[in-house]
Length: 321
Ligand SMILES: Cc1cc2nc3c(=O)[nH]c(=O)nc-3n(C[C@H](O)[C@H](O)[C@H](O)COP(=O)(O)OP(=O)(O)OC[C@H]3O[C@@H](n4cnc5c(N)ncnc54)[C@H](O)[C@@H]3O)c2cc1C
Image 1: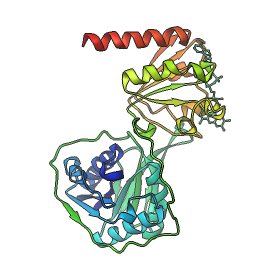
Image 2: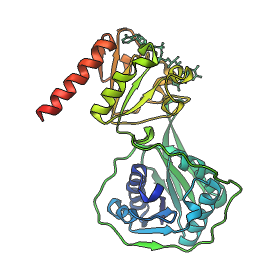
Image 3: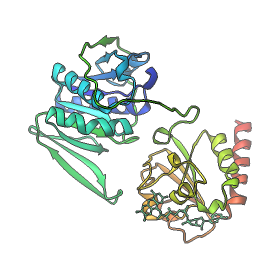
Image 4: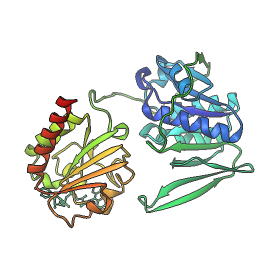
């Protein structure tokens, strides 16, 4: 069996979980086995929806101790579930939760782990061969997992969620919850915006903005096209924007469908976090800016003229449609 851990904060299934289940079903088909999804926590409101994406069974461990990100208890619960269900492949999303759970889970299961995979594996005897990008996207490495139980974490946006089935009834799985040594004291959630790793559209700006007081046009453009805002590292380091917006090698790696870079030079450390975006649009006054090499569309011009005109064009387009 392929078991997919579907993240569902407050009962709401994450997009990354639909991707993981779509991927899990394809891996299960390759191995000639079934695919099950598991949610952890006492709110399984939308869990049945995972059936649409290929989960033949959806299981929930309904315990409020699993509502919070305590990677030790999440990992031990998943390990127990995997053992009980006889899962040979466990798939997680390569999110901050997935990343903190995958290693612990692999140790508990004596399993080989490849994190951040971005393509379907090939089956070679008892081995799974999987690929992932390495060295900030400059190379692709192929790994063979030779252990009987295998753990994979799937890069965001590597797979498009495919809704081909129907919802299934959620089964309750009774497991003894082992609480770890981590105590969650406070949870602060940001409401409203789609978090960067999940965003389909991202508008990002850099030092070319000159001053934080100029960010209004970036916010305005983002609001018009339903985008999440991001920034370059020096911008976050200078406290012009919050650190959770920092994208790149040392920040968040994103893979949106549309990424708009405004007044960002496109240094290699920057590109590392965005070069898997589907469509990249660059606005920069310097025609030699390195970002143009990675761009699908480029506008050479002063952002203080180009961005307001872009906002105006979007508004006109929306009004006419
Ligand atoms: C180990 C390491 C890790 C790093 N990790 C990251 C990372 O994760 N993310 C990251 O972003 N950086 C990272 N950096 C920093 C990176 O090397 C660059 O310094 C940084 O990305 C530059 O930010 P920027 O493009 O906003 O600023 P700048 O390099 O100053 O570029 C500003 C750009 O704005 C353009 N511009 C200026 N005025 C206008 C205007 N009016 N209209 C249009 N365009 C204009 C300029 O032509 C220029 O291209 C890292 C560096 C190191 C050494």
